[in-house]
Image (cartoon, rainbow, N blue to C red; front, top):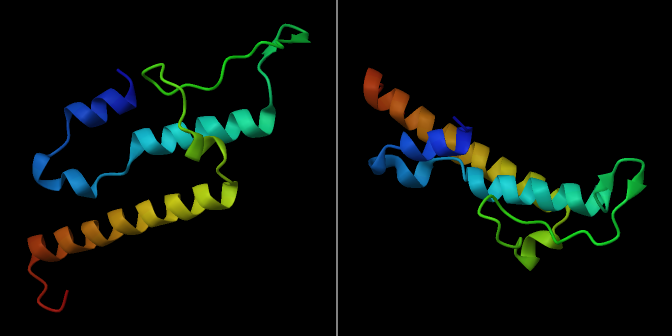
Length: 101
């Protein structure tokens, strides 16, 4: 089973806003890869008619991602990690009843 499907199938609805935005990150990575590696290579040659990158559903990657920089990607990734860290700390405090959390 692919991780994205596993994540969707096992999400806790009460925590839906606290999950990593996996699909968005995946699209961002694919867009950066296409931007930095250029056209897809076929055998020893290069395909000159490469279709634009698509997401997991086969839809074109939005222009906002196609023009994204590595710095923007890392900034978004850091933001996602902070969100998860804060949520995890909150849940730990709630479950072990630490009043100063």
